[in-house]
Image (cartoon, rainbow, N blue to C red; front, side, top):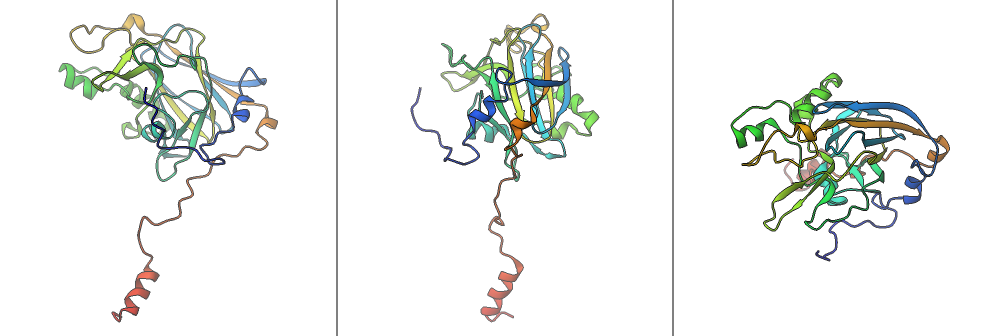
Length: 289
């Protein structure tokens, strides 16, 4: 592994400098919490749900290994949505405890922070695989058509499209995903690979909602990804598919006494534009007016 330092590094007190003690205090191991909602994402289908700011939500394995493709928007402004590529730069390509999921420009703020992960110790396997992937994105019917010449409607992209329609969103709002429980990496040719999901019943990934959220997830039709989806050995992975569970918790309010939702990125510039007043003064000084 390379020991070249990360390009984006936190300075003390910046929004990248996570208060680990605060997030630890919100986990089930360290406090009692009120369960306020439960959801099941059906096998090979999608579901959307809301999470109020200051709440915790858990994505969990309920039956057996299963990958979930996850999207997230600001509940009140869906133009602000999870930005997978910037999260990959600011955090890492495979996220875990204390990593934050960031929103798109011009908002650029933490939308959710991971506070607990039963697979946090998975690390890097012998083939370079890691879990909770931001390298790749969702499967979709357009790529499937290119690779196979056939149409199939129930890819993760399509599942997410159907899931968000009741909230007034469309296919154009579906975006690059966090592949929860998915094990991936890059091979010696720098090509993306996927491995069988290492999660099993009882495993979970848990988030703290920094703002009011609309979340959506697809139970990947590829199931645990132990079966090839394309190529000569491809076959229907139906027997590897399972549902996923979601739980939403309200922490004790005293734990949130000093917490506030993060503000938008504080950039106040004009992207190099000059104000009309400045342009007028410059032209007058040059004798143009």
